[in-house]
Length: 151
Image (cartoon, rainbow, N blue to C red):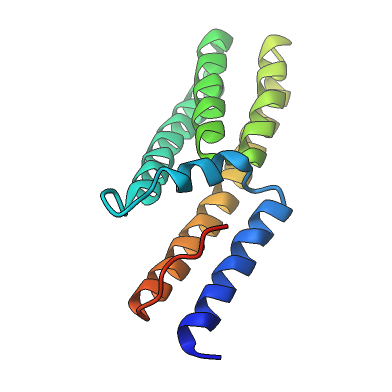
């Protein structure tokens, strides 16, 4: 088996594991289908924006939840945004935690919100690392002269 085939197989196995473990869902496939020769970095660009957005929102949430009088409407608005952007790239596990987070907001449950924030940060960090690895594998396939296999 040549290097390209080996790298492609590794990429496919890795991508499949991300779906299997629930990190990504169908939405990520749809993003990939929007990528073509005219826009080869589409997915990386969209995901990079998701990273920037998420980090800003997570920092904001941490600040709000440290305050004496917590503005739960603001917390909910941020979590709603995070849920939307994670679902738009198919980051399924982040999206799921956001749903629980919004429930804690509704109940004005400070402890619940703080727990959810830690959980969201954890899931976000996991998916960020997984996607960065995925993009590195894709770069290796391309550098070896191969093409990215379609799933």
